Length: 130
Length: 151
Image (cartoon, rainbow over all chains, first blue to last red; front, side, top):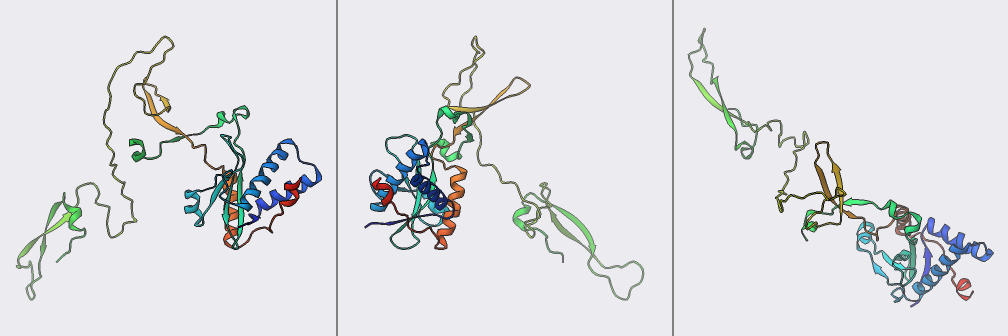
């Protein structure tokens, strides 16, 4: 069953419109071009089969609990430790998939990511015992 | 008769305050009454929490009692090396927050790295808005991937 892909409002729609228009105009820079290619490929897989192997789709329980609807996460690329991710949900109509958010590729060491690593307190006493 | 102000369970460590009161004022007698007097025990809390009342629980919040008790697992002496470093034995975590106190003590508190799978605040905000609109049945028009997949 093929799904219809929609974008979440308002930011995802704006992002998609911006990227797709600039792609048609040939105004995407090198990084954006690379990202857009991955996005289109992943969305193609998502429309074909949300459980496609390349997507490694899985439900995120914490987000499902938070929002009250099933939220899934899929990867935009394979064999990459810090792959970009997209979050999606079924709906609003049957046969629809709405892409809710994109989590871009996490910044690597070169861009000072390690300098901004946060240290948090240990989770709970119960976990600490494990 | 006066009723106790506090539930009995909260008065386990209480003392009683004895009050001698006139039980009744005899009628028709002038001057000092000749009626008997009676001792009434008024319980009061001497545990330092006499202002806590179950009747008005929001008046003050009782501090939750800590259930965790710290125990000494290891006790040893170490010497700092040439570079003034000491080693921890059997440290359970990789990272520690260190506080050097003015009296020469060092306080170590275990820390863990934030999960790399965590979603950034920006993406989470985007997710919030998208889900709110999706619940209202709002989403963009279907996107056309054909133009981009052929290219």
